[in-house]
Amino acid sequence: MDSSDEDEERTFVRVLSEKYNPENFPYGQGVVVLPSPPGSPVKDRLFLPNILVLNDCGISKAGDRSDIEAFCAHVLELDLAYNQLNDWGEISTIVSSIPRLDFLNLSMNPLSGVQLQPREADLFSRVRRLVLINTRVSWDTVHTLTQHTPELKELFLCLNGYDSVSESQACCPSLSLLQITGNQLQDWAEVRKFGLLYPGLSTLVLANNSVDSVGDTKETLESLFPNLRSINLNNSGLGKWEDIERLNFFPKLEDIKAQGIPLLQSYSTQERRSLLLAQLPSVMVLNGSMVSVGEREDAERFFIRYYQDFPELERPQRYHTLVSRYGHLAPLAEVDLRPRRTVVDVRWGDRVEPVPLRLKQTVGDLKKQLKALLQLPSSGIRLFHIDKELSSVLGPEELKCGFRALHSYSIQDGDEILVVPKVKNRCSSSDF
Image (cartoon, rainbow, N blue to C red; front, side):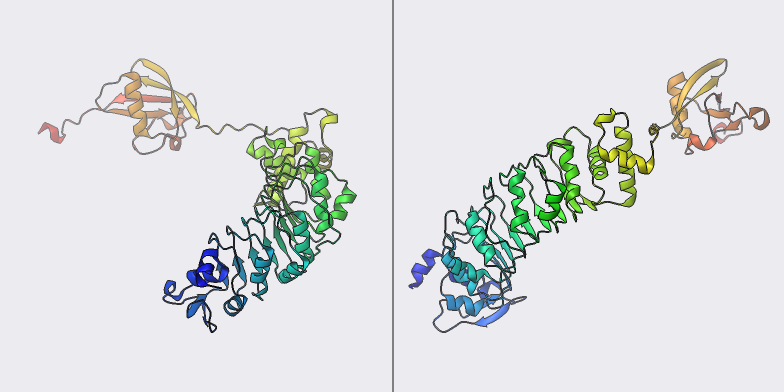
């Protein structure tokens, strides 16, 4: 092939030579240095890491297989997102030439309607993590791939426009994580097919779909999802508490995300978490946060108090289970956490005025307050605290220190503050 033709087609080999040219890596750190095969269009030597990121490079062809084999023998991860690959034959040429490839990202390549042959899918057999986000690949292609990747662990099928799931004659027992965020799945009858397709599934990410229910019995869910430990239902269409209760039917489920669902819109943030947590006794991680023993007990007690005024027929079964554990609980006492205010009688000569005090304020603050409130003269004043209960024993106590807080004097409602003017010392230096 003429090099100008290869430039125009933007092959994998050409982009590789451009991006990982030794001129771009003057120190050669963290890369492998390999000699070029005879007659290779690739420059003399390339600096190649074992994780190749070649996204948004316009790649549409593989290029020479021998070049890929020579330079990518050590590569473990390959990111080809946002390219122009629309031929599974070209993709399989790249994949088959990288013998240690574990992770492959083909997101945003135009693969809609492109047929994948079984012989081509065989070349993906070593891939363990496959990303096909927004490729619009058909379910037939997905099934062909999963049937020929016996070690596949993670599959990403987000933003592919799926509103249904087609069944397959062969399952993929190795798959443990399926992320299918941002599609148009709505009916639980479609979701349940994942249990048949991927019986080893431990993580299912259904966020940003319109799934409106969890519609199976306990026996069915136990059978279909025996290993599921984590489910993400964020921004789904769940609208009934019964759907939350059915999540308890998954035998190993311990990590649940359920934010942005219609069911919880009318509750406060704290009510949402407490009501969810009380309904899910086996959950260990809720909406990304670990659940402590203390938080669980608080949530379950909140649940009892929340539902105890409901009519009997409207109380969920979980309410009765928790009442059998904690008993009927008295309503929580309302605690006023606002700063405490105390009212004292302020005496100035023959004048007495009730004055509210904030006990956090200082003696200096109180002097300023009284001067303004009682229109006292601007000359100095002295303040004395008279305890209504102990004044006959202790007598008045002068409030001397301007920086001292009033609460430190144990001032109470009904006590008296005596205001007297300061008397200048006749021997003060001002007289001289």
